[in-house]
Length: 341
Image 1 (cartoon, helix red, strand yellow):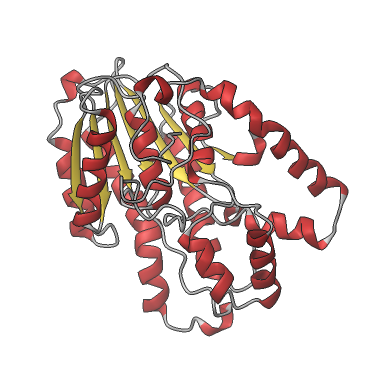
Image 2 (cartoon, rainbow, N blue to C red):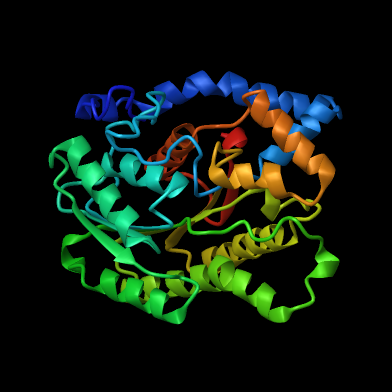
């Protein structure tokens, strides 16, 4: 992570501190959560389990990681090992977890790598690009490209794939696609109220269809060759595994994505596929859950967990994902949760 308490004051030395060392400070906390989940059925433990499903793209505490909004934490930083000379594509990059990943990955890509930031807001993408350049002062020598695209639509997917194709593959040894873009959906209603197929299809277009189509397009654009590592990350959730009342759209989308990427791992054994559940992040999506969840017990549990300070920062969770990518020893197709690592 980076300490933004006084603006962009982080050195490359800070950026490259050992993740594995820093992450150890969180192991006891994670182990404590897991031990309680097995030994107790109390309401507090149920709350913890419920909150693990929130892995949003819009952090309430990170409005913009810029000199005007210096709130990123100095907790964990990626270790020196790099991810090669890569084309790294991050969807949903303009806010929240995606924005944090953009900063963290910038430390791990070799010079002349391409960092492709994809989101609907061109203004926020351009601000992110400026902030990364400001932070590193051009030392990382990345080619940062912003792609304004709505991945709910065919045109947005095609635009993103075409932008990726413009990268010279001969200079790359790694293709990394992070499918982070997602939406919460209407959590104020229960399953029996969703009688309009068009409404359901609109939700699934971004959260399932868009992710599959983009992944297929990118992998087709960069086919298998011995010297090219190909990695695909799906930002998942506990909701992919466990049902929650009034969250039918979100749970359905996450479950479908997990299975989709498990199938990909079976079909394409040379592609490294990971579904990563980042845990309960302190984000705007979590704020929406506290305010609008139709299930009263869920809403109260979310509020209690927030007030008790049980949410994770995007930086803390992102650091564990960085270590997974660096170690590259996970089982392809696996679903890994922050608290399992």
